[in-house]
Length: 283
Image (cartoon, rainbow, N blue to C red):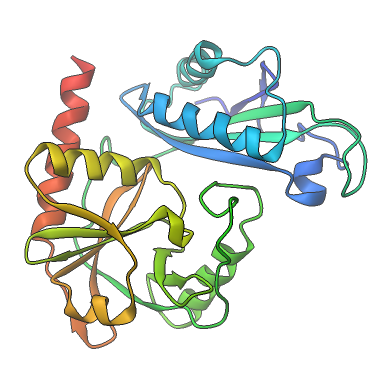
């Protein structure tokens, strides 16, 4: 297996430096990223990732490079898959603003990278044991236009993950500046009450997750009711199930929140639907 990356359209060795110290992604977190899952050599949900990428680039006023379009986006991933031999992988795409300047950039030209990291599971798999979670109390995420995008400024999620780790938790729940529960440190949030799915609204500041949208669409297509609404800690205590979603892991269910215990029936059903949908799309 070769360790390779794609930097601005050129595939090169990934076990040596590929960017310079003055890169704005390093200096200012000036950019955004997409994490995608490669299943049996094929990247999933590319249209959704590309749509979020281009919307986010417009918000950040980063011009997409002239050598990057939807077809190149897909072809670049396939090329890395073939040249590295990684058939089951996490693919990270990073878009950053190139050029000099301080907080005020000298230009808005974009640069990009593709990276692949091997995954053990060949497809989406529900975790065997429920996660232990709690609410992160130290900071709250502000609600604004940046909230729903995966920018390179991930400090909230890093701090939340460290807090959970220090307490022996598998993950933790983030609140917005209004006190609503919006997501976990690594994915979108869903709860199940009486067979109905509830997930925080994008207007509450959660990331506009690609897997979040897939779960909503799958549920609706199979007659499962879904509501996007504000959630609070009381809703967690009243729920039958609690699970998180992201484009790489799919669904991950929580077994406990403080003294509350959860089942995982519907999260298992939706995972099966997700796997079946990817199999159908690949034939």
